[in-house]
Length: 100
Image (cartoon, rainbow, N blue to C red; front, side, top):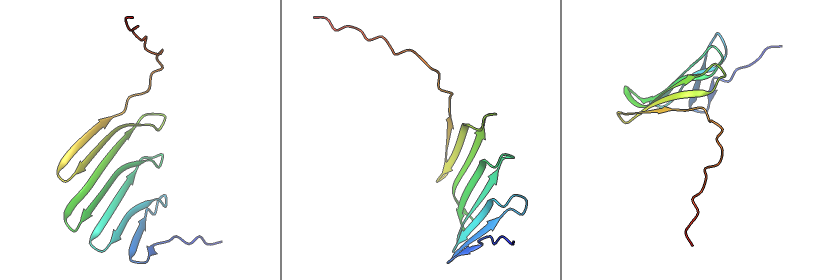
């Protein structure tokens, strides 16, 4: 049985990695995107550009359980960095009693 992989959807061009079959790039007119993945197939880098002009760039870092721990985005020349913290279970905060 031969598996057919989609490489075109109308004007949208799709490129896949020969190693793992994951989507590696797209193109639609002058807009292109590229994807990179970790060894566990989690997205590690995504970028979009219009011609030579970058539009968006994102990088992801994961912990050993595959959870996103850091995300860095660049949009319009401004870089945003987000760090995700593990949720800690806490008891509900005590509420102060209002004076009567």
